[in-house]
Image (cartoon, rainbow, N blue to C red; front, top):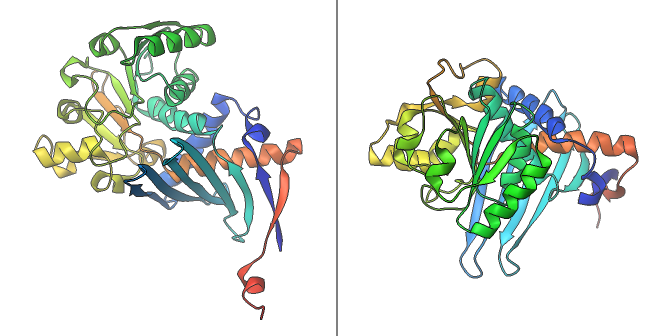
Length: 332
């Protein structure tokens, strides 16, 4: 038997700042750029009740862990449950099982911020955000740790939601945050554009992007979901979190290739390759860049490892036991 730490959301939700998540996730992507294994999500969709059951994994050899997510979203309750197993990369033993709910917006936001730091202009100071939920919150708080943000425009279709979210972020951030009434207003003048939606169709007109804009798109992990239009894809230096997603679930990119708007080799590279210096990031001030963040085990394992170490130091969590197969399979 081996003792494994079980950590609830309450155990970990005060153990790290957005900047801490960004640092951990950046190192995770650096390891990926140096060759660490990672696989895109495996998604199983259910029609009735409608739901998604999915998982994705990564090995971070320098951190010494393996892990990822397994979660269910939708179904009868219309909610989501995130389970994060973490294993020792040398022994293979389970180190921890985390309730991944509270860390979810922070680790995903951190991946977006790593993309911003690698691809956005150094002087980027204005952000247009599409969406007003937890993921938009995580993206914005993380971006604020890598750029000196002074202006934020929030757009989502429901007026009450965007105004409430803008008010919350205006109080939290050292920036002027305001709701706007159209997608065009969110894009106009924005140095960074973030799409954190569940929209199946493009949420803005790519012709409106000004030269030098960086776009983080994180709501398109399905072949039929495309927050970005063909124009945006064609105008951009396009970076994915994992290259294999280009033919699996990166909806905007897949649609642009299928329509002929771009060639199949339009993809610039992976974020890890940029972070590790194997592929160049931004090379010109007027270059438009995109980071397509569909969610990977890289940011999940990196964040979980950080929280596991801090929880150990703080004496958090409870212990559960796992039997190795050599014991479990020898009984009568």
